[in-house]
Length: 221
Image 1: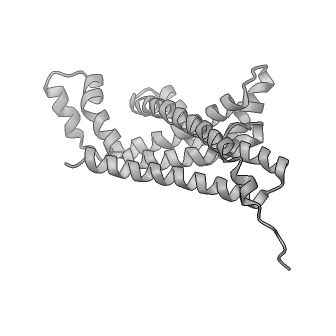
Image 2: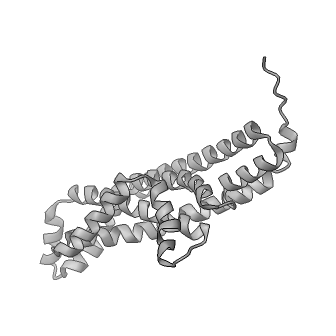
Image 3: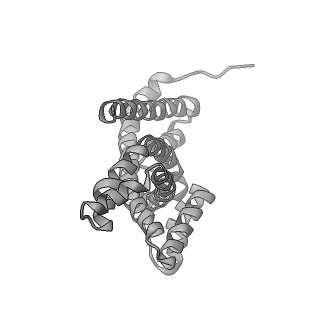
């Protein structure tokens, strides 16, 4: 028989703490994306460099990031590296793990975007007197980022959801960690996690909608 009594008022009183956790979640996600985009560009250049060691390093990074669980990557950042005497805070470990994952997926997205750009673009830049690096920086890179814009949005959403894995390494200041602590304090499991799910949903929907509006405005032609 269903005899659960909902205590929404008790849980809503703790909503400010959950929103503070949501801000930490956004901080981790945004930082991991910004650093991940830079690293992904570097990995893309390394794969195109013609150097076998650099290309092999970049390929291994992408393969590990895309073919192992994100939880494994976060664990390695927190517990694996600690085996060598290097210790990171839960926040830093979570950031490293998600950034590693983002960089791998984004590098693969960028590789696909590059295939959509005709080789004649590079030759056109060279014919104007540009070096290979200048041609990539001023002609290829902007087009690559434009093509990969919406996939980057999807990765941002994924980064936000991945922050919930931080609880496994002791992260308790993000949205999921705060919710977990409040649950241990109040035992209002359904109400707390329902509200957390709504907050996650709103964040991801706002980002998705914002990205679509930005794409429609920035990439009209």
